[in-house]
Image (cartoon, rainbow, N blue to C red):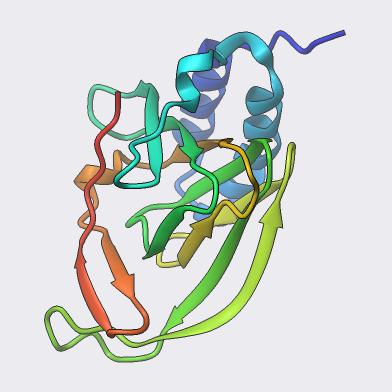
Amino acid sequence: MADDYTLESFVEDLRRILGETQDEASILKQVGPLARRAALSPAWRSDDQYIADPELGFGSTLLHVEPDDSLFIVADSWLPGRGVNAHDHGTWAVVVGVDGDERNILWERVDDGSRPGHAELRRLDERVIARGDVLLVPEGSIHSVVNETARTTLSFHVYGRHLNQTGRSQFDPETRTEKPFLIETR
């Protein structure tokens, strides 16, 4: 029997959690299982969420954003062999695998951030998330994503703020550069 936990119910639960606490660790602990439940529910999914920009290698489908940009939920599709360079979010995030595997490489910034456009990263770890796996991403974390499979994959992403409102960055560990990172959703 499929879980009929709707996106609307999930958003109501998020609003309740955020109304009760601003402690990031507590938020992540509570949101993780609910995001997994929502991500695995077929109620929100559609074939058009697998559409990705061939130039970028991924696509983001807007599922929900609060009027004040305080919650942002998207479905991200990843083309085969593609992904996104190291980036931060400027807010907490919860990522859940929905269809296919995605490899997340976790990074640490090792410079002091004092030189505009410059960033030095050190690779810390990696984690492959598959269907139902949850990745909790505290604010300040840096990760990159790659789909190493032969088909387009899909994941469910929940953020504490709209990503285009957080001042987040994308990094190139090889060239040691940092630049602003905005996304387009459909």
